[in-house]
Length: 118
Image (cartoon, rainbow, N blue to C red; front, side, top):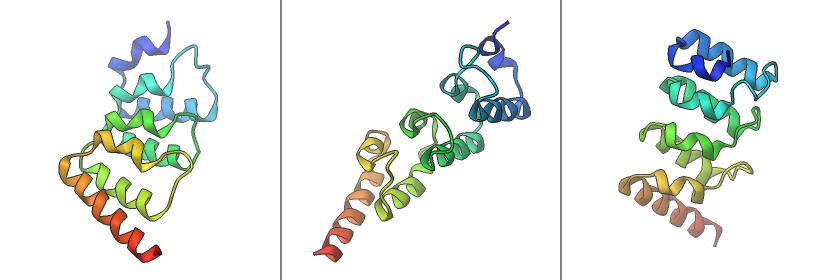
């Protein structure tokens, strides 16, 4: 049986084990991919995976995780990306997932940063 067919029945601890096995390369992606696990992850797991993806510690691209994050999580991401550019993701890639208020925040911070550089 392929692991992907078991995903709906796994608990948090098993999902954690699976994520670590995928990141370390212990499991062949023919069995399951990190992208396939995303809908079954809890909020904390998704945030942690996103942070690891930003740091280049896992094979998944951070943009693939964006639809699975909570709206509240984007505020921290916005702050990180405006303060320091990341080679794995750009703020423009995050914009479609932001609320109107978060977009205003991005604009205000970007404007402020641009004024300081001038």
